[in-house]
Image 1: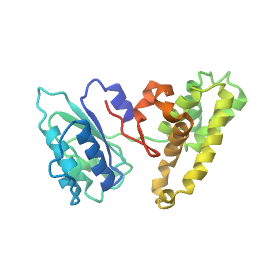
Image 2 (image 1 turned 90 degrees about the horizontal axis):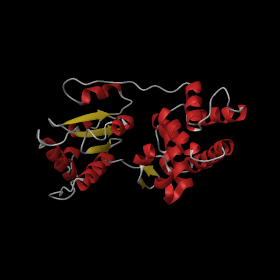
Image 3 (image 1 turned 180 degrees about the vertical axis):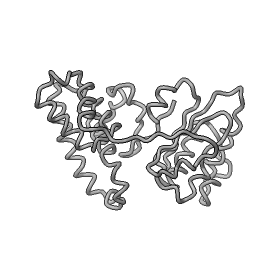
Image 4 (image 1 turned 90 degrees about the vertical axis):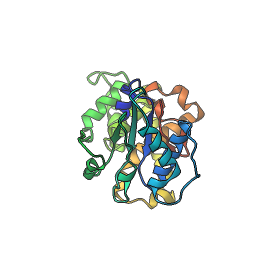
Length: 255
């Protein structure tokens, strides 16, 4: 979804991101979108069902009112892994837009009516992960020192072969030098932040299936902690859409 949005950022206006983890994150996302679009939330916030929430209603109305004279919009509904609470009721609709859903639930394809395309994203192989990191380090696999390749393998394994997490780590490590020291610093910082995260009440309350997002979250936490307020300036442009940050969570990107 991120790659598609980046590639087609000039084809849509606006691009909106909805965190569909649960009802609360959906409400919050629509509220943010309403503010970004400059839409007044008539009647204030609603504590009833999500589809009657003021932010949801006003954004729905705005999207549905777009005509042929308006730009096409794109809404990315991210992390729609739990479809049991009625998330289908908050799927954006309109003739001038498209919706992308990211989910680990195969039933999510039923969340939108009509025809739709689906794509399954698998994990990287160890060699694919190493190759991706080496590209960020601008090193040829055949010529790279054994120690660097071994550390690349360790990073990829820590990130559980998740392509996005490896790509973000590579962009960050590649901006540091020398490569061998940068890899070692990343591994050390990853372990430090891992211990911090495991002590959080939030993490202890997660289901086993939800902890699969830990590598990506930890990887981005390492980058944020090390770069601090200068994160936007020093990160490669293709990853700046993960900013700004809300707490320890990487927030929506907007165009």
